[in-house]
Image 1 (cartoon, helix red, strand yellow):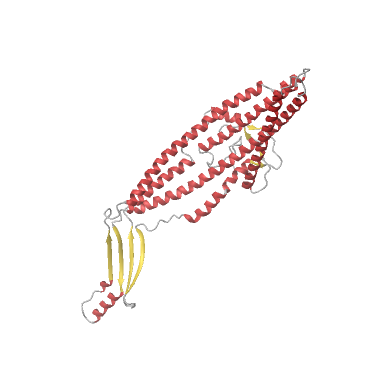
Image 2 (cartoon, helix red, strand yellow):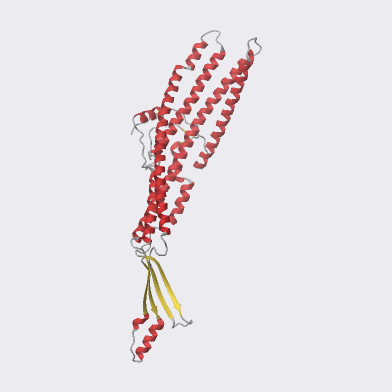
Length: 420
């Protein structure tokens, strides 16, 4: 495994660890509710091997205890129905377990998105505040010059519009941060003051991983496994219905007639011919499949299976396209990141400001423009940086590693295992 380089950053007081926050996915309300339901929803017992239904009957004639007949009626399974039923139940259980993993994967992906979005919004909000300060200084300089002969009021108006826009962006970022904080607090079930970003994965290490071919498209992950099990379930349901159609023996009934037994005993006691076996009766019913039911239910199950097969192939193709797009997005973001980093180096505002401050008579608007240009570059750089991290997590999801046991923190430079 490639060792990733951590970002250097200070942790806010009272902050929460990212690993601990991600681990709350295991206790997600949806997962807990499903876990509780699953404890009694399914069982491994699929019934008697060759019997579909069993019924005990009592018949009475003229409300006389002598006129009693006791019967045990059995409805046999079709040829191969027992095995088909067992296979169907096994796939159903397996799919249920796979759905739990899929729900865990979704819960993890949601928490990763919250962490990344919040970190980005907080960085942007700080930059917006700096931009507001620069914009206010620019308006103050322009306001002092509005009495000069060559002053262009459009410049002041544009500066005020820009300030209003920046304040709106700052307020929007603050609102979004507050919403994310509330969601994080709900998952942590306690107070939330921010994330401890110590050891956060660096963009440079993600770039190295991507360019070394560390990301490969894999359609054999949690979502595809679930879809494949859905297809298997539809097929096994069709096979089960087909086996049910082979119930040529519709029922077997074993009876004991008390009145017949007593009658034969009387004949015996009188010295006449008797047969005590007349008290025992065997009845059987035979079906003629295809002449009455028309195989409507079998045809319906077959159509469901074929439709599920078409959906599986379509979703498999769509999922593969999404995976490839995520990997391509990383390549595009890497190019943007390098361009912005190079521009940041070329337009070093701090060095430029220091250089101009050493000169006499430098227009303060030039200095403010340099600072604003650097801040705009920084804003775009932060957006690209966190876009890269988000796509990195999406690719971890696409490769099936996000919820792969043991769970790991992919936002950590060390990819440490989450505490179990």
